[in-house]
Length: 136
Image (tube, rainbow, N blue to C red; front, side, top):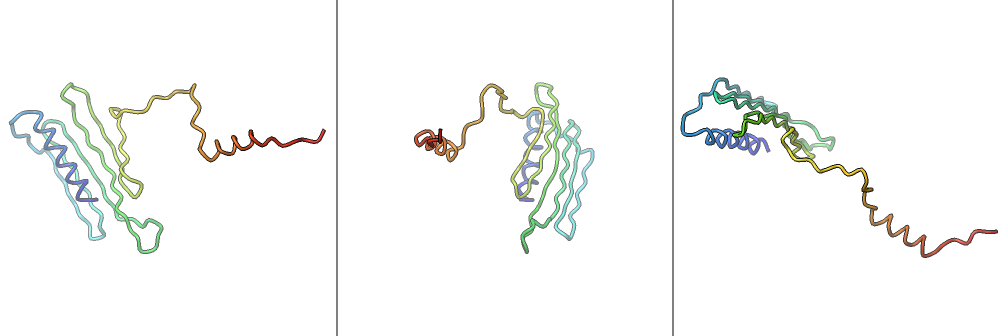
């Protein structure tokens, strides 16, 4: 997972750099640290305003002898249309969880009730088909 996230970060920076043309983009700041415990941290900033930071830690999942990598990070840059983009993310045993103002969200419709789960719907149909006779 760690390699995939690092590859994603470098791919994102390479593709963003290709949007600006063929001019080389200077690296203004770059840090990287890998710990013996499986944790790591890296960050960088480029001359065209791209910044990225990521922290990975090895954690216990609560299951004996099962450990997982948890990664948290952020990337920011300016889109070609001038919109500032800031993406934050967490990746762990629950999957990749990105957040950012530029990401689409499902519309909220307060007038539509949530769907009835199938088991509840079957129970309602059974109750309607077998009404209990109440004593008078």
